[in-house]
Amino acid sequence: MSYKTHPFWSVEKLLAPAKNSQGQPHLNVSVLSHHIPKTAGSSLRVAFERALGGRNVYGVYANTGASAMSKGEGIWLPSKAKVLHGHFKPHINHIKTFPNAIRAVWVRDPLERIWSFVGHLLALKEKHPHYILLKAKLPKASLKSQESIVNELILNNTIEAFTNTYSRFFNAVPIDEFSFVGSKHKYEEGLKQLSDLTEIELKTLQVNRRTSQTYQLPSSIKRLESHLPHEYKIVGDFL
Image (cartoon, rainbow, N blue to C red; front, side, top):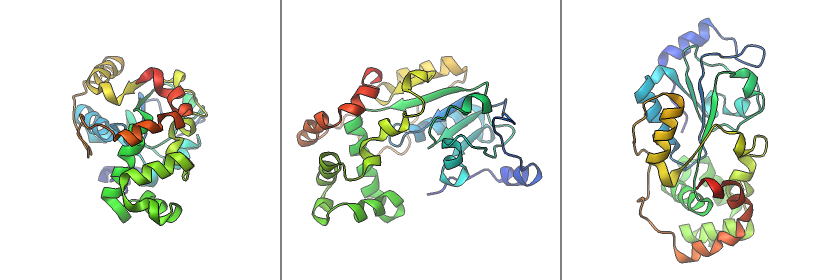
């Protein structure tokens, strides 16, 4: 499940291996596009690539420096990169490393995001490392269905990273400090706002979507909202 890099980047990295950091900022990057899993991030990355060309959009994932990026450490980047998009957390050091970039992120109803995320893991099974984590951490009786897994995760906080996603993501840089916060539930409207803000013509695409936009959560799952007040407090105004 690693991100596939452009073949030209391997050559560029060999010839110019220096990392970008606070002391060696990347002035070409104009957008730090943070992808919280199951918030339309895959669709957005493809939209950026189609608008700017693949060589101008660099995916920051596990195999391309997401950990270092999340810690505010130095990271190798293509010189032509205009948009950095991927699973990395915001860090205060990014202001100096990317002085010309805005922070952008999308959010989704916390319950719906967890439900979708679990469905994603069940579809991929052992192909995704988080599915293996589910099997290791949850009681076997809880693994019988998507509904039972979500119940176990939320009621018992079995895997804190799954149920406190927003709390963990925005702990260093508050959501109010982002230049753009889009709602997965108002995707087309948000995409237009992001296009205007970045002056990049982004078109609506649907990638990696496993559930219908009209799908309704089971009533038993909806009742769990009261167990996630900390998550709704962070993103509620942006949904």
